[in-house]
Image (cartoon, rainbow, N blue to C red):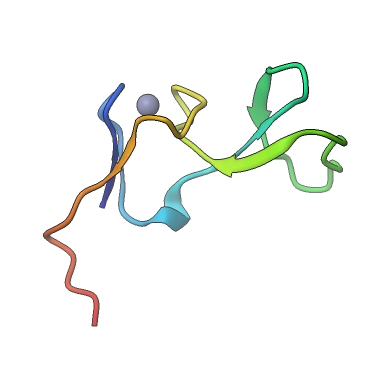
Length: 66
Ligand SMILES: [Zn+2]
């Protein structure tokens, strides 16, 4: 489980975290299918509320992956 320590939203796995694009000018927006990513922008998985991955924290424990 992954949790955002800012808004306390939780994600079951990393795959549940949406992709966010950070543009060259610092603005952030959600990655949209079919829209090409602008040059100089950065794509990462981040909290959809906070629009950053800075507060995401891996919570060890309850998962039983084998
Ligand atoms: Zn958040």
